[in-house]
Image (cartoon, rainbow, N blue to C red):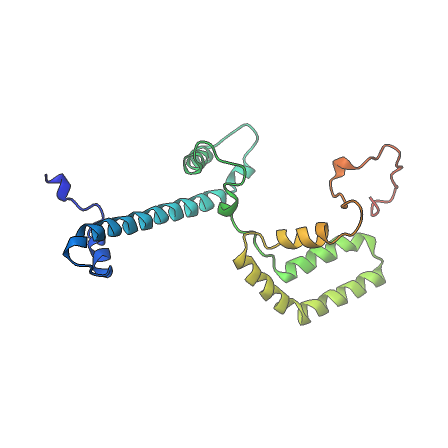
Length: 200
């Protein structure tokens, strides 16, 4: 009898009952049922949210990438066990899609630096100086506003690139076949590669 009087909600169900409208004495049991349903729904939602956040934090760990092949340290074993516990026994293909960490937005300076580094081997000195001047103008005039837009978009989506990539790289093409970016699908049997490093 003592166990039946225990309140697992620690008084929250009574608080929920107070917020519900008073329908009279005969509906007291209905109020109890509704408050229990609201409490159970909130508890379930909090549990799902906690598991989601824990899984996102676990999937943000990259320490296992730096370990030598075949050797697994104790922290990595612990991390792997926790991922298996939080992911369930039979996860589906896209079941972790929303739990993946957000794609970080690189700074405009870093992007421009990598761009200039990538075009340096293929441009002459004059063309590279012009590209550098244009890049500096871009950083000064347009980059802050565009970087702000990109930051705002990254807060609304898990990957700020994927929808633009699908639309502008794949779906905007009016060709009969989509351009393939997969090197394994290219047939180089009858193609003589160029000796120029920049062209390769």
